[in-house]
Length: 182
Image (cartoon, rainbow, N blue to C red; front, side):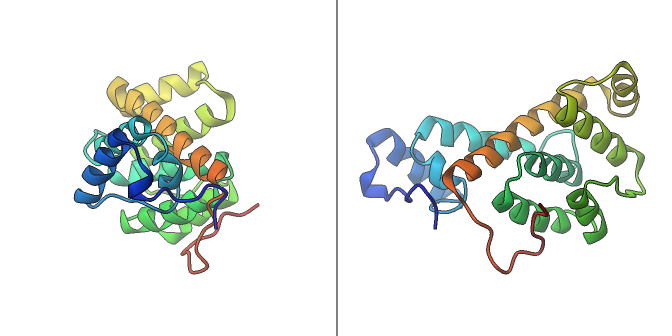
């Protein structure tokens, strides 16, 4: 159960209804998780779904997007998105060990320098709100400006996801592959 009731299609105004129809037609999520909150503002919902689509085809790998997503929803203590993103992360090729290390707040062994650079830059940005000169130089050398820009966008995207889920009171399913640790 959530704090905000799911909005039925017939309860939506014309603009929200059109966005709902398009999202359903594209196989998008409706009626659960953070989508419950997004449905109350069609333009926000639409923008967030476009942002999600962008992340499927940006210069970051799917695994890197998931590293950022896990760090971000953990930062916001967002249990529902953690459960969803941990499953998506494993499907993107991250091991359970990597997912659980992030859950524990410890640096995983990625076996990949670019993934480690993404992890370190995202973690520092979330912890401090910026990159130190050393952190910036490391990210610049490993990722370049375009991926650094997309990394920041990805953090913002999952900040919205985590905060919306928290505000709505979304709870993870009992059978989640990973549960957020306190």
